[in-house]
Image (cartoon, rainbow, N blue to C red):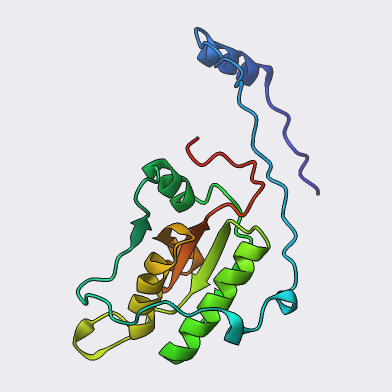
Amino acid sequence: MKKEKEQPAPINAELFQQALDGVIPLPPSNRISLVQPLRRVPPRSTAIPANLIKDTLSDNDAGGDVPTEFVRAGMSRMALRNLRRGRWPMQDTLDLHGLHSDAARKLLLKFLHGAMQHNLRFVCVIHGKGWQPGGKDGVLKSRVRHWLAQYPEVLAFCEAPQNAGGSGAVWVLLKAGGQSSIALGK
C-alpha cells in the first residue's frame, strides 16, 4: 500500500496566521544590485618586447616585514578599501611561480607596462607564499611587493583574500590610462 502524502490540516494554516499576527513587513529595498560588464583583455602578444621597457626597480628592500597593503601618497584609503573588498572585477592576472628574482622583475615590468597600455585598472599578481628558514617570508613575495610600491603607476595594492590566493597574491590598482568611468572614492 502506498502512503498518500498528507495535506496540511486547516488548523496548521490558522496557527501560522496566529504566529504572524502583529508582524510588520520590511519595507521594499531601494537598492539595485551592481552588474559590472566584463572588460575584454587584449592578447599580451601586442605588448612591447621586455628589452625595450626601462627597468628602474630596485631589489634592495628595507628588509623586515612584508607589507600586506600599500597606498600611494595622495590616494584615498577608500580606494584601497574598495580594492580589498573586490568591488571591481580583475582584468588580468600574472603568475610568477617558479621564477628567479631577475626573471620575475622583468616579467612584472612587462605585465604592468602592457596593462597600462591597454587601460587596465585592476590586476592580480601571483607570487606564491615562498618559504625561508627561520619563518621568513619568501624572497619573491617580498620583492614583488617592494617592486609594486616603486612602480609609479601603481596606486595601491592589497593582499588577496584567502579564496583568491591569500598571502601568495596581491590585487593591484593601476592609474587610469585615459578614459575611466570608475570613481575610486565612492
